[in-house]
Image (cartoon, rainbow, N blue to C red):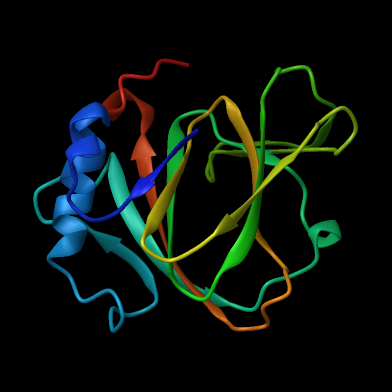
Length: 163
């Protein structure tokens, strides 16, 4: 897992190069008015990296199952509001709740044996969940404000991650 600030800063040199490219392109967009749904980057391979804009009310943790991806990493950026996110390292030995869905590149686990860590996700930061990270997002907290979020799907070969 990697957490960082979305604005250009000296730490960017330590991020995988695709993260810098994504953040640079996002900086050129007015994310507050961008339509909901799927979008593509002008200078990046649309088969390997794209993003979606979402708006939603958060839900209790019990409404979700821990998830992982095999071929894509999630780079999540809260644009407005805040939410709680949870994560844990994936041992690969957790009890499967729902079989791997190849079309969605997602596998859901049961909670049993997963020790979750919690983060308060706020605007202007990014949260990268690579394939070795079980995660749950959109979790309800003490703030009832609707969330506007951007989720970038990055194929792992762009992060130099192999499955």
